[in-house]
Amino acid sequence: MSNKPLSVDQTLIKAKSLAKKDSPDQAMQLYQAVLKRFPRNKRAIEGLNLLERPKPNQEQIVLNKAPTQEQINGLIALYNQGQLQEALDQGTALYEQYPNVPLILNILGAVNAGLGRLDQAVASYSKALQIKPDYAEAHSNLGNALSDFGKHEEAIASLNKALQLKPDFAEAHYNLGKALNNLGKHEESIASYTKSLQIKPDFAKAHNNLGVALRALGKHEEAIASYTKALLIKPEYAEAHNNLGNVLKNLGKHEEAIASYSKALQIKPDYAEAKSQKRHQQAYICDWVSLESEGSAFASSLATLGTTGTAVSPLSLLSFEDHPERNRKRAKSFAEKKYTRTALLEFERSQVKPSRIRIGYFSADF
Image (tube, rainbow, N blue to C red):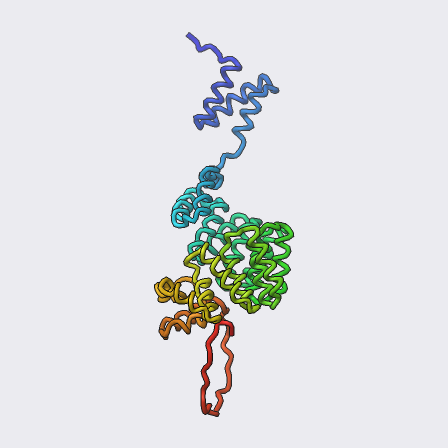
């Protein structure tokens, strides 16, 4: 008994089945046989076009893979909640699974920066930019990390790239302001912070840092206005309370400065700079009652204050502790934080020996 010829519909179904089973040559013969008899058959034309379309290789398939939005949201949530080590572990696992997704690398850069791993942060941002050179957020974050690294000129170059790509990028203007301020270019820094605030008026960090730059230029009243705006937007902003205390101290308003430091410490009890400055101002105005009442709590933290973790002005604590080694550590930590390393200048040594050295009152104000 001879096999009955397939109908056009059966032929097309078989061709489609063969194509799915990775038998493209046989499928192609069937589609061509249909088109020989019916040149305008739409299903045969579409099937043939699909077969002739180049198939992605395995490497391309991997490149095109992307994580789900749920995975990305979960990673961002861990970062925002301060669970940085867990975010690092999950982000690294996602990166191994999706090595060509720049968003994952950008998040990993932020996580590493938060953990103080600046080398790894810079590497992550750089990899993201290799994949997506026009990624403005990664350029901005790279600039921020380079600035924290002390590489301020490189930071400025990265931030300018971010702003070329996205001129209305408030965070990039803010980061540029930080880098310029670290180079002592306070006027340019103020211009960058001002641009940031024109775009994003409720940007509390930009108001705070604008105050820092204004204070550096001796514009104390303007600095107070900036810190006040930051605190209106974000009342629990410990750094702004501390910075307000610093400028009030400069103006000789010591009781108000102490009140600002106290607010900073209510929000952030382990805030080393606020703790040391408040103590120093209490001694400056001879507030022995407060010094005595807070003495035991202060004494318990004195050994680590400025010697580990956050740097504090070493002069603010000299009158409270006669411990040369801890004072040396405070001075070293403060200098490394505050001053960029530059080439040493050579001076001629004086041949005249001083007859007497006079030691007066040590103050963090000098």
